[in-house]
Amino acid sequence: MQFPPPATAQILLSLLRSAASFHLPAVARHIHAHLLKSCLLHSSPFPSSLLNAYTKSDLQLDAYILFDEIPHPDIFLYSSILAAHARYNSLSSFLSIFRRMISVHFLLPDDFVLATLVNACARFLSLRLGRQVHAYVLVSTFSSDDIVKSSLVDMYSKCGLPNDARRVFDSIELKNFVSLTTMVSGYAANGCIAEALELFWRMRERSVFVWTALISGLVRSGNGFEGLNLFVEMRREGTRIDDAFVLSSVVSASADMAMLALGKQLHCLSVSLGYESNMMLGNAFVDMYAKCSDIASSRMAFDKILKIKCVVSWTTMIVGEAQHGRAEESLDLFARMVSSGVKPNEITFVGLIYACSHIGLVWKGRELFDSMLKDYGIKPSLKHYTCLLDLFSRSGHLSEAQSLIQIMPYEPDEAAWAALLSACNKHGDIQLGVHVADKLLRLKPQVSSTYILLSNTYAIAGKWDSVANARKLMDDLEIKKQPGYSWIEVGRESCLFQAGVVPLHMRENILALLKELMEEMKKRGYVPDTSSVLHDLDEDEKELQLFMHSERLAVAFGLLKSASGMTIRVLKNLRVCGDCHTFMKLISSISGREIVVRDANRFHHFECGRCSCGDFW
DNA sequence: ATAGGGTTAG
Image 1 (cartoon, rainbow, N blue to C red):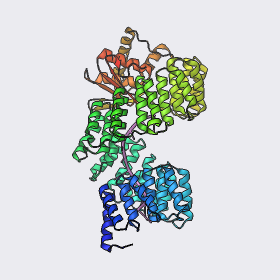
Image 2: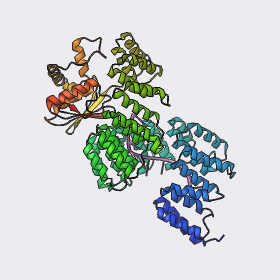
Image 3: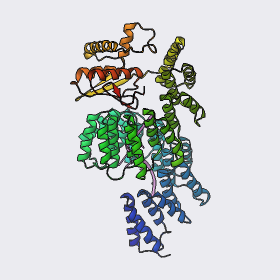
Image 4: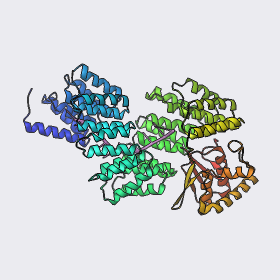
């Protein structure tokens, strides 16, 4: 074996390091050839540096092959290959390499391997294994290693245990930016806003990295509003944005809250900062426009992703089209995606079956479901079964739905039973409905919507005692009823509505308008279905109660506020019930306006008395 | 060679 002059070795290593950090596959391959020619490939630390360069340049396969070619991998090489498996592969493949390291090459994990091992537990959310590793760390010679400790902080945070994370964090001797960022991110992602902010503001310097950790954590834990405010704060501090990570998070927040005007501002900002063609950010904008019901802009943002559209880009667009009831477009996009060589993932199929469900394409949905495993090797999850169940249920194929729920290889969850139950309610199969309702009750759900659904079923069946019982049970279990809410954008103004609460300053106007609309509806022969929920109220009260649905309030508000002919957007409703659906159709036919309503996860465009969902209700 | 920030569903 020949040794290169030290200078040459240094140059080769720094080239490999650059290849890793700047993602340069060609450089990695070139140096690989050079090392092979000069018989240096097997001498440490070249193999591990090369392997690192390959994985960071998105050449996982080359990395795995390289590893297999080295007959006696040392602990350096093992920690590289383990990191690669943690990042890009499965927990089982990670563990099989780890076992080989111990039982074939008799290497014990060092601090590097332990940190990687904990990192793998965090990524695959394996708390059980994570605790075992923690125990091993405590009795090992690395029990006071700060890097291993910060990986443990991350592991406990990702597994939803911020208090355990804090305990490890407190034991860290020298807290640096990484460990502080990890803890801030952990608090934010678990919704511990006060704790996150306390740590965050105590930091001497705040890099864009820790800002991103905080903001994205808040957004992901459903605190988008706080996230956006902090983004403003960050801009005020003059923090330089030098990559697209923060922007993606705030765009995602504006998508979740359906804040179109804000989303557009962020789009302008992104362009001015030079991220117009950034794929990740492009995906976020496609999603934002779709969730704000501006499907045309969504499509434009999608077409702007010129380079390579990844699975996320295609999936986002497919789901966006599906949510707008444009199933043909979704299926068309899927065909284009497949022919451009991008492999769909499990989320893609959720979107596709969902698209079919929206317009009642039963056979196509079933075909897609079957092709998941057959053509793409994706095992259908409970979510996919629930989607298919939803498709059968909505389209009135009750017997197929019933047999599917019996033969599916998962224990049906609340969502699955709820899909079947709402179908029973809608299609009037009361006997089956009560049976399913009992099943649901036995699952002891903690969400109020199931109880509402349940009591509706009993109401349809006329079992008033059971209705009262369901309501009482809800009270006993102290399940808080999440109020239905909507908000509406009229011009620059947006207004939030909560079901049953009339905004005080508009009370008179809104109630008068609702009365007027009610008269108009009666003239046209529409009789609201009050039987299910409101059996013990008197007639007048019933009408008023029905109008208290937030969607209707929002529409009333919009009718009052907006100039005629303007589109009214009602966003973020929890559920559009069949009754509301009829109401919206009527309003759109009377007023000649377009009304866009978003329920839990899909849009309904009402225009001239028609709905984009093909009157599927 | 190891630890921290991102976009899609529910």
